[in-house]
Image (cartoon, rainbow, N blue to C red; front, top):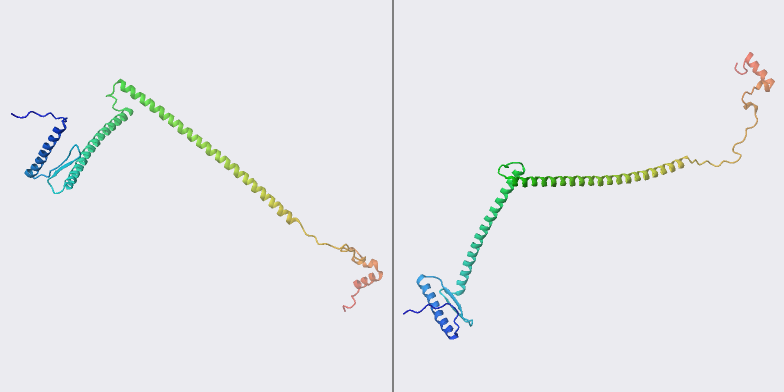
Length: 240
């Protein structure tokens, strides 16, 4: 008669729990050994008791080599799984972006007045509201751009006026300085150094009637007049 099926739960009796652990541990290690021999497999088993004692079996020469091999295989498997999940997520993102692009293209055609036959009344009303909102936004943006341009032009005008005032003021200052310099040069050139003259520099000439304009010697000396008449009527003495 076979044994009944054992219920899988923690054994409350401490002695029975220890006996069951020893029997099943030995059976597990025996099965691992048989599997490695019969199937030429690399088998490793690690068991910790409730008290923390270690029981192990390894078919290879080193448990560490088997653990390293396990880590490499586990890492590659996790990478492959992660790559598969990443590929799946990328494909899902691609499908979402594709649907989004198609929706935007369809909306653009509708805004341009194309492909309107497939739309119902409600969708046409919504499209009309979108167009009106777009137009209001465009007008508002255009108005703001014009206002910004006017503000910029006024600012530039103010800067130019200030620059013009500054240049005029500098021009007036330069003109005033040039006039002052020219006046000083003219005043310096018109000044003449007159030398000092003594009081008796200008003296009247001696009263000689022969030096007077219109003087007639004949009227002054009768003999002299006769000699002049003789010279005229006859000859000049000393010339023959």
